[in-house]
Image (tube, rainbow, N blue to C red; front, top):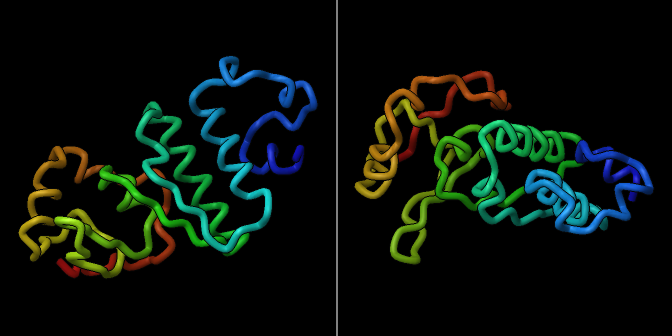
Length: 150
């Protein structure tokens, strides 16, 4: 367990394991949940809104952690989120659900490209323009941007 704590950037000390949940920050709690998810070396981790309650800096750290886990262990991560900026930073493939149906599935969403699907257009349109123009903090795996399939 101490190795897992270190792997998710938590103190690898026995004293940390003695803390109660109320003594952890939200980011520490999220990292602890990720460590528990890694406990049995899964091939898939389902991360449902894993950054929604976090400050921007901690969000970026968690996104980088997910990318590192995926790269180092080959664990697939199903990243479920309404935060399209996070999705654009971390995901290799994107599925957009509309009305409980899969409306599109394709390569990573690139916010700078014009989507074709009306729902995807509205999602992209809701992102502040300044945010679209900033560079992602987590480096994408591919050197060339993917065309937006929507």
